[in-house]
Image (cartoon, rainbow, N blue to C red; front, side, top):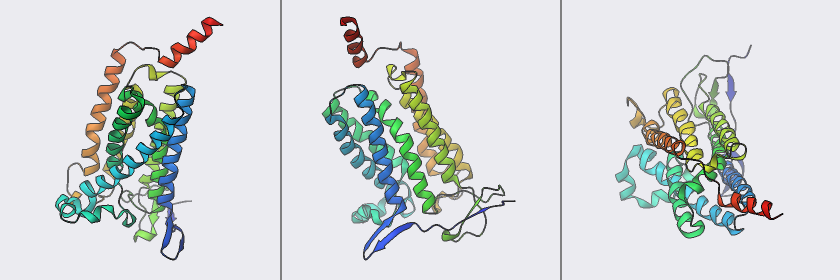
Length: 282
């Protein structure tokens, strides 16, 4: 009978001189590219300009990485000591030393998409977010797989048969593989938002898909933090850890968006009206 799983995967794919390719970096790249492909398909379905996808990839990738790095430095890095990075700003750019925050990435992406909306699409901010988050949900699963390959961000000791002993992090007892739990809720969130868009046309209610994603991802993340080990020393003894404190505003925002979207009548999108006009002419 299986009592636990010994996890001893090398986080490096290969190393050639000073160049090292790690699973974590590769899976971040896969996450960004996968989200790009999904949004590209949506834009094609809606007959949007061809350059919208390329420009979104540019705005999205840069804002996501910058936000993820800044989020780590401000909320988790150096024990959550903001002044350390204020006094040593060059430490912020040392991405190769590790440290990317999903909450920071989310915040950076929100800023990037606001700029993208203003400079490229000229459409509603929520229009973009409703579509982008479908790809982001799937991309999140790849990022958490990267955490698993790094043997990091796992949970407390467990007696469950799927507990992982993270050998490379010096563990000798099975722990909750919370990375896998997060992969699962990312995949479920992707399935829900994907079906909402393609089957139920939930995009007709601006903010509904985005709000559902916020609640699905960050409420689950909030609850999951109760069985996670603290990521930083300063979190020990906190009633709610940093991940939970950062998740709460996003959950509340999601609930507000859902309520507001459901209170308004659904409206046809412009590409649907054009499609219907074409049908009438024929």
